[in-house]
Length: 205
Image (cartoon, rainbow, N blue to C red; front, side):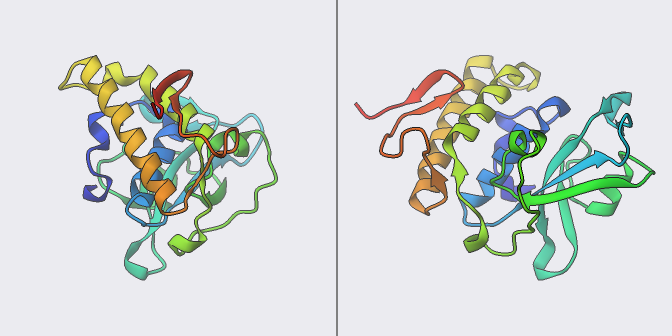
């Protein structure tokens, strides 16, 4: 997953409970390089059913980042919860269920909370960077907070180093997204402040 850079250094790829935050950051990493992506949601078809998560964990839903491979019709899923390598969407779904499932494909900048709240968001596969809607800053700040909670699962560096990396990369990607017109500051349109959850990690002095 070379295109995703050093995300594994500060995002726990082995924690499925933050799939929504991880998918957003993976899409941000691509968007900061002006590469479009989509978010692929999978839900059980029938009420009361669950998906088969890793380690036998039942899932109410799952989401991962998706791109179209080399201008083909093949839809490739990037989901480190299952594999370090991308896989076609049909294989990915089969790892979670052998039954019929419900799927929703939305822009990679779309955060899971709105989908889970039942917001009326038309399904859309993103074919070009121009089609990608802006990321919302408060979604990024929420995702940052969720990732920080589980950084202790990442091996190889201290917690403080991982936290510093998360903060610095969040700031870098936010500024890059803003520069290419793919960031929306809804609560403070003219501000420069960036939070990770409730912690301020950037401001203009």
